[in-house]
Image 1 (spheres, protein in one colour):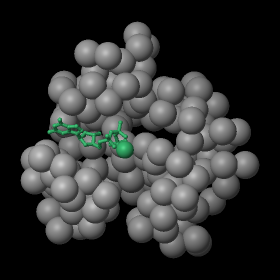
Image 2: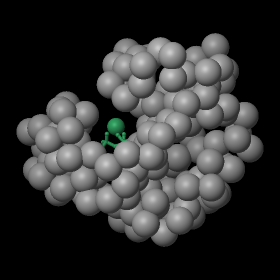
Image 3: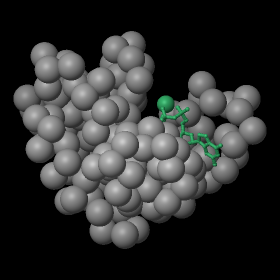
Length: 138
Ligand code: GTP
Ligand code: MG
């Protein structure tokens, strides 16, 4: 059974959308097997998003991710990585399919409400970045 790392981003926690976003995951058959609310520093956000370090929006991205609390969570299910990205919708909410989290809740390509791991290797690394094994209860 597959696991993926999800983050409910500051634009969504600010608008009290954690429960409605979690309902989308659970309705899709994803199980929330670990979850905590934290406030990242800009340095931590930069470490997490290190692959984007050369992108022109890196400073904006890390500043935004440190601008308020986030909810980090581990989602578990059959094909959890792909299923989560399907439920999230396209990065740009204007291109996100109807009914997806980003279509319903995201405000812009930057403030797009959720993050989800994009591959098995990144999922494992991202889960380990935030959670000890004992904090994940399947
Ligand atoms: P994540 O699940 O957050 O990784 O989103 P993604 O995989 O759909 O997108 P990608 O990995 O390409 O980009 C990572 C994040 O950077 C996005 O979710 C956005 O929050 C942000 N981002 C991407 N493009 C832009 C942009 O043009 N401007 C800004 N401000 N942020 C961007
Ligand atoms: Mg990504």
